[in-house]
Structures are given as C-alpha cells and as structure tokens.
Image (cartoon, rainbow, N blue to C red; front, side, top):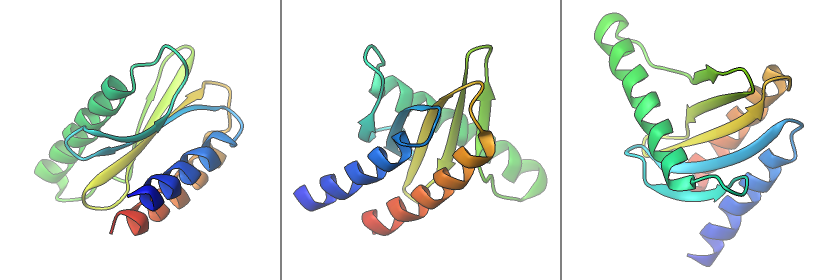
Length: 122
C-alpha cells in the first residue's frame, strides 16, 4: 500500500510541476478520493466527487447520442480551468489550472499521467 501511495504521489507532484497547474486529484469513477495535491482551502473530496460527476454525465450523454467515448471534459471560468480525464476503467484524474496557462501542455501531461495512474492501479 505504501508503494502504491508513493507512486501516485509522484504522479501528482509531476503534474504540479507543469506551469499553471495548481491542484491535482485522483478519484474513483464514482467520486471517492484516492490521492490529492491541492491548494490550501480546497476541499479535495468535493473536488474529486464533483469532477467524477461531471465526467460521468458527459460520458452518459455521449454514449446515449453518439455511442462514443469521452476523452476529457474541460470547464472554464473567468479565473481557472478544470480538466478531468479517465485514467483507466476505475479511476480519473482532474487538474485545476490558471486560465492563462497553456492548455496544450496541460493536456499532454495529463494524458501521460492518466496512463501512469492506470498502470499503477492495475
């Protein structure tokens, strides 16, 4: 269990090194927090649960109308961006970025991290 926690922690730290990424969480598909590295004052359990709900809703809509899968969801506000992506059949990873950060770089790193998480949790 310690090795698993350490390996997931490394993934979180690597994502936080990307310019503009302020918070990172890994959750089960039903929204239970697995690991997090979030800003002080953030409620990581809520961050994980709401992200899982948004990703699940997007997957439901997409499957219902297009019979296709969702790669990721992106929510933008005036100040920040939230991106959630599946990291295997049982988990997801979500980041919170500044609005001015490079979305392309964040997506590349998020995709790599999602693959790593899937391998760790297998």
